[in-house]
Length: 217
Image 1 (cartoon, helix red, strand yellow):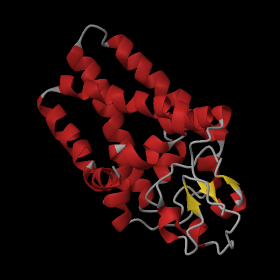
Image 2: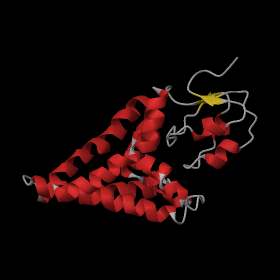
Image 3: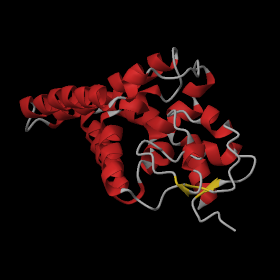
């Protein structure tokens, strides 16, 4: 299962590219994007923002491709604030809903609404990565924001743990694209609602102090 996930994280961005190309030939195909809008919310009910850091084709596109030319700078705090995030959520959902309403009954028109929102937001994410880190868009992605709120309310236990043996070397903080500080959760679950569980902190931890199972003993 681990190898399958690793393969998916490395190559699933091809699905995003395929979506963009195929939809140009038939806009009705773009309607499948609704699955990627609903999935983050559904997964968040059980495992926080796990979808964002592991399954999302666009997120994997940012990790696999965009990260190669990203500036990797810290993201402005305004992008992380729920005020800004909800403003973006309301704006985009309003435009999305109006588009669906205007094209109701026309699958090509509805497909274009989905296609437009996916392409435009992906381009925005790429542009932002030229100034900040490759996951900048993920800080205020509307679906990610909703998943974050659900994670905050649900307080799932099926998320990463930080062992009490953590030495606070701060290496994990330097590699977190969402600006989270894992070592602050020493001896507890990494309950930050925006943790996308991408596994970068697990990979770089020199003491193997971060993982999904109890690390005590």
